[in-house]
Length: 337
Image (spheres, one colour):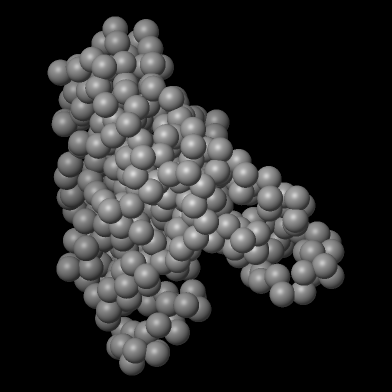
């Protein structure tokens, strides 16, 4: 195990924020997990685990140890005529895994194409896009207790998935390290076109719908048209969660803002955060070296030299303006450290 001192984290976060970590190490194999957990640098300091660094905003130097997750591996646990169960190491790149399943014609995560980050973040965030969430196809989560180094398998129900939420983001935050997940995927085509924009894109371009590669490619093209390439413009993808309100609050909002878009989700109603931000005239706005992406108001960007504090200040201004106009509170998806 190699532990480095006073290391820049610029290459380890997609915002490209140049802060330093007191210590940094990486996990290449599962057998190294216990060694890292038992090290003095880990025991005596705060810690964070980084995968792709695509869901984090560093505001200050990190006075602790950063553990970069590089665990790799995809294996078929079992299969039958209809389904296949894949065990995937948490350090695998998420989009690479999607492309692997598309190539094998294993249906289930094609709608989640081009989501940045690594597999380990998927159950923490309950990642989702275009009508699919990871909770729809996940079977188990393998994780190590940070205090005892003991391995535990969490069932789907034990993960307590919610909208961009899980037990790993709440009750068990900082208590477990996810080493792998198991996905149950279908060998039989199961097309999910519940998301209107995706279906319209396929119809408009006269694309065959019952084809897994077509679905994945369509999602990729839609995402590219809305989201910046983090290699060119620093960002963390969608910065804010959508807002959910009950019927009485929605009714009052519609009286004042009849053009307000909303979607019924069970007993509550989803209001797109991007629309709220755009309605407050933030889309495309630049403040110092930070800004809001010109093609998607949900995305906060680093125009080259922004500090984490600059970006956080912009985020706080956006939250304040939405609250002032609509009385609704935006909640960041991104972890602010």
